[in-house]
Length: 302
Picture (cartoon, helix red, strand yellow):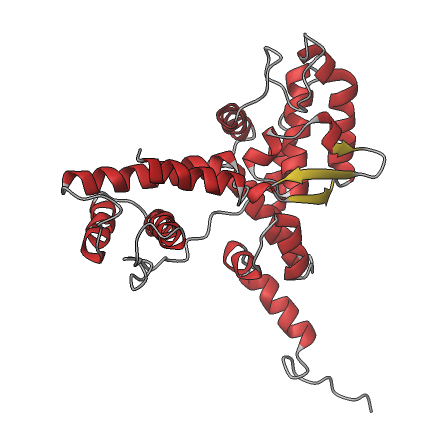
């Protein structure tokens, strides 16, 4: 990568406090962008709008989803904005480039009954069963991202207050409640399961793999897929499915969208509005209960 790109990534890490996963995404997108420019004998200092558009077209033609193309454009736009701000180049070639249209593709939502089958699938008393039950209950109870749940330390869970401190995107901290069932399962795991996994007695992480090391995102995905099969769920279940189910079930239960926004760790409520949806039946129930003329007026008794 060029020195300018390295400097920009360092700026994002130090000044903006971007999380490592986000930094990796920026580095991948901008690395592809620089490779594209080099193939055409250009670099970021001399790139024009046509080169940027050609790069985006290359991504689209390669089958990349609109959301991923939009993310790449954001990375390129931010990079060029940085170059202008630092006085390295005079203009930003991305200012008049629109984002690709993003279709509203909502992930599937598990029913409450399906959630019950999933979270109770680890029914044994082995350290793995206790760990998996605690993780699944916590993920659904709190709506955490997979990177957030595997990044939890033992000190992040306060069983006394029933709260979990989460380090989210952009290194922003938020506090979410455990919920009664998750509280019980995490307590059981800490008391009877984790100490048997932590062979060194030195790991600060909450959830450990069978070798006593930190559980990775890939490791969690494998566990979730196995438990979903065990629960007899035919559909594909991902950590995002549980996060989306968490938000949807809250809204259907009467939670306001601002509260859900805070629990999910969204900076903008518009993200929450896209991320969550309320079932048609729930919308109808709320409408009929709230609108004065939604149902025929009851006849007065004679």
